[in-house]
Amino acid sequence: MIVKVMESVLAANESAALRVRGRLAGSGTFMVNLIGSPGAGKTSLLERCVPVLSRQLRLGIIEGDVETIRDAERLSGLGVPIVAVSTKGMCHLDSATIDEALNGLPADLDLVFIENVGNLVCPAEFDLGEAEKTAVVSVTEGHDKPEKYPLLFRLASVVVLNKADLAPYTDFDGAAFRASLSRLNPRSELFEVSCRAGSGLDPWISRILSQAAAFREGRRTKT
Amino acid sequence: MIVKVMESVLAANESAALRVRGRLAGSGTFMVNLIGSPGAGKTSLLERCVPVLSRQLRLGIIEGDVETIRDAERLSGLGVPIVAVSTKGMCHLDSATIDEALNGLPADLDLVFIENVGNLVCPAEFDLGEAEKTAVVSVTEGHDKPEKYPLLFRLASVVVLNKADLAPYTDFDGAAFRASLSRLNPRSELFEVSCRAGSGLDPWISRILSQAAAFREGRRTKT
Image 1 (cartoon, rainbow over the protein chains, first blue to last red):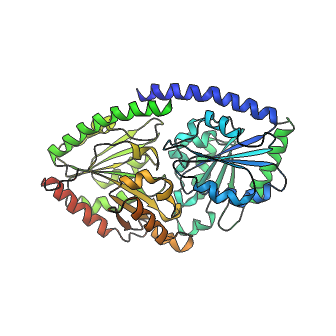
Image 2 (image 1 turned 90 degrees about the horizontal axis):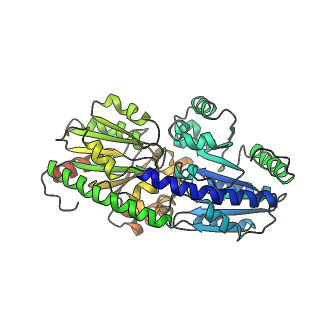
Image 3 (image 1 turned 180 degrees about the vertical axis):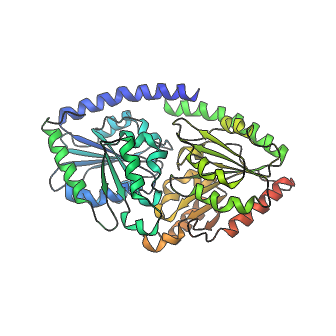
């Protein structure tokens, strides 16, 4: 019974996602949906990278949280427009909410980051009309996460592996992690970073810049 | 609309939870629902504690996972009966599933651990008929988790704070974590442990032993 309920919810979500995707194609806005567990480092990633990206791109953020707007507050000093969405207990953002949130941002942005609710499961099921999903995962969560939560890793074009500086203090097996990822999604791109130490972020930032430019110029064929 | 859907799902869940709770009261089986993010250490906690607990208690495990039965496989050497539940993509266990899973375990157990799907959000909303919920959270997730995911911390009688050995390498603020927890749930009991190092576990194990004994003897009034 629950599965049937989910199917109807997902169908409604899909039609709003199409609307969002059309809208962003029209404005040339590259939208990235950041998905990861609580504490994986999604907000920290934005804190590190938005100051660099916003020098070259017009950028906005949609911040999803279950009950608070703490993450939006953390990011409020970055000087970019932010729409804070409190999901009132729901475990994911949906595309109708994103459609509405976009009304609160300038219409001519180059790049929108969505920080989804901290959750490796449900957010992966909801297409938000984004250009791509990015999985944010940390070494302290263990190398078995792609195997255990495969849907996200199958769908994510990019995987950011955070807290690389803590690897020596854990049993994280990088080779096993990379092997799982390659098996689930051979085309995914992996970036190993430490948001706390500020290391490994430049390649990810460069990729965002080039992808956003290509999207804007309509040269990007994959949506 | 989604909220209405959730309400009907939750009402159905509540009636099955009552059935489970009555069944366990009859058999004197203390059931603990372990809830935490992916990688917080729920399986590691069981790996450490089940060998000790099973010397004194008849124990069973219900292992929930989204797609795989990896955690059940990890625990299969412990010599206790395990029912593996794959939720087929759903982000939480529900009480009807637990009712069915209990049929796969011996009827006269003293203690059942449920390891819920790795998720701080949805599992907190679904009463499984357990005697108590235990939140498993790790220092590497950050001290703001109680504030950001308050429902679980309001409902959990016990909080196990894992990966205490990694605290020196993070910005985890223990005082802030404890203050949030006290504010959300003044009666919750906090245990700081490292499953990897095997430290801090004895007080938690002692508490389980005494709670299970009290439940069995019917002296425990709070269900």
